[in-house]
Length: 367
Image (cartoon, rainbow, N blue to C red):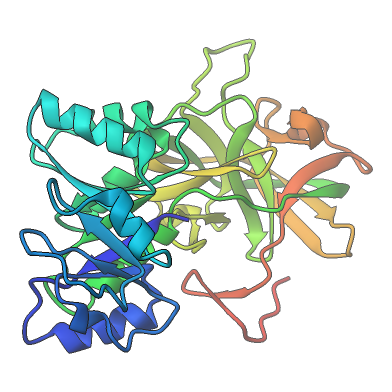
């Protein structure tokens, strides 16, 4: 999960409310230029002292991390004098020389706080690449949540975290949500097909994304919120048409899929250009992809019933056509119309019921 740091240095009248919100939302760090603002914060929040342009005080408690600006104290001496405190560097990138400073910091420091003055993300790409083998953390300054989301995805790796100055109550929540929405891992299970049935006409959705899917990657789709099957993208050759590696022929429009927002679900019928989806591979590794278009058309449909090792029932309704496929163990590509009882497919079993797409612990019977 990505790190979210909230910069309260410029917060004024709403500072107390912003801090309370940040603590409640479990923001990873609160950044202050006054040590007094860090006192009383719970241990769940990393207390970051950023005394830009100020002389360092002799006592640095209660800070957990101190970010030093150029010429601000001797790093080695400070670390020796304050063994319980972690130190890092602040670098403002404005030219080739400061970019090299940022690369060096990212390679050697435990914490590198970077401010890029140029709006392009190419300098950040260079720093991330330069620090590929480093164990330190890159925290990049973002002006708002939208930029934070972009920073998290640079070079498919992004910064380890983002620092953002809130302008109002609610910004801490939005930043934390953006950090939690980043790629992770799902526990996929092997499902056994128990029945297939041709069920006649209906509307199905082809989801065209702005990303190139890998051959072992697709999206999770299911008729019920507690059970989904991994539908593969059209990256595999077909006899009558070229591959469309950005597309998943996903299923009937009532079906659930997993969005890129805190494992929320959406109906396929709700998706539109700009929506976020979770792409998932056969190992359960995930990444967020953006929808470019959704094609809903009337087609013959096939219903697939499967069961999990624990007895949970899963249903998926797909277009009734040979070229529509799902993924099985080991990345096996299975044509939907050729599935038969006993075949194994990969699936996912969310544990919570859903209300308007959000997980909620309540009684809900789906049939």
